[in-house]
Length: 119
Image 1 (cartoon, one colour):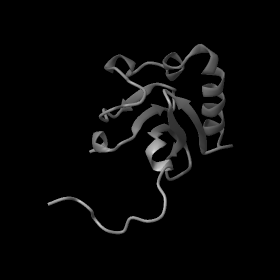
Image 2 (spheres, one colour):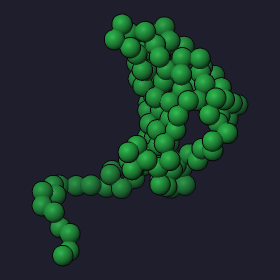
Image 3 (cartoon, rainbow, N blue to C red):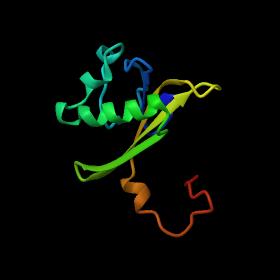
């Protein structure tokens, strides 16, 4: 079901280990099964690990629940969002990363209210 979405989804547990990623067609940031169980810090470029750690610490301590970035990559506008995942008692369970290509969405104007499929 999650593989059908046009977004990249990854989940990192409370111990900073990658536990899940979807296999969406056209994934922006390719993942291999080898990342499962790996510390998330090992999945990012060294120059950005301090930012990853800052986000995880803010989520872990409850100071923040969302972090977002957007970058240009290969002429495309990429939106990256991180969400703290918490249980019903607000205890930190991990982090959900959602990445989406906004390039075509950003071009939308006006309204499209009717289905325009050809028969």
